[in-house]
Image (cartoon, rainbow, N blue to C red):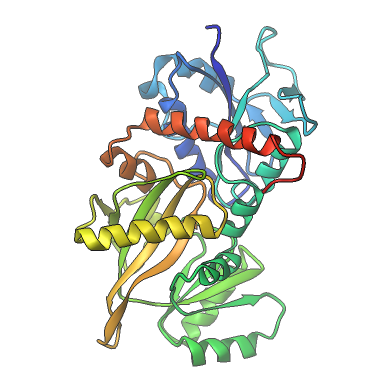
Length: 376
């Protein structure tokens, strides 16, 4: 069909969240109107190879129901040139149809964690001068690194739980003493640059803390330790560049003491309640805080903003209200994920959401290219 936009859908990737991204890519691919878009599905393997999935291309005409739960990663190897104006994949192996157009108009990255959500792919797109969905290099990298993210939140005046950060190789004994003095037990230990609860551990005593620290350091050289709170989890979905749209807040009711990777993606024991059972004043407050969170890291395109609502502290004293937890610049997009479900309830079905994301990509690209200097 003439006049369709060609969308390079990048998914998978090298991080521990590879399979989560494949599930989100299936949702995105099934949401793109075939009358308006032609999809080039490129899965990135866990060792970093880009493969154009002819299997997915063959399935796309059958509509969303024809797609698997997770898009496969396989097919002839391709790459993307970083020079401006190329805007086409380069085949590195035989096996692609001779008449297949490898050009594209916009990139839709659907990857989580390092080598996808952290500004790396975004930088490649900037070098190639091609529009892409989501935040730029700065917003992506700040939001990916929980240490930098917490500092940005503090600068914006957003309250959060007590936290401390540690880099592997530095004085571990001094760090443990600092955590025990400033935070205490229970606490949570997280890799600084992963999401989806990968590598996260709860520590209720020194032995559990040592084990959780060892585990988190398997994934990242930086870890962040956060105070444990008894709080409700409230989430808001965001769309926009300068003009922002916020979804109705939702509440996550975890199936465990904390929401593990299995809780989110395997057992699906966590429940999303939309709208969150909070009064209108609290809903307005958290939506305003979500806008501040979004802008604090320089986010554009989309995000999911996560908050704790602490009504009472663990010791029974009055709670601190909303506490900024984290922002996800490429939120999970599988049918059971919070981002699409929040927008669906808020009156934006999947097709409308992806249309808007692509519009925002072109809007941001046009704004950036109108200026001579380097833009964020």
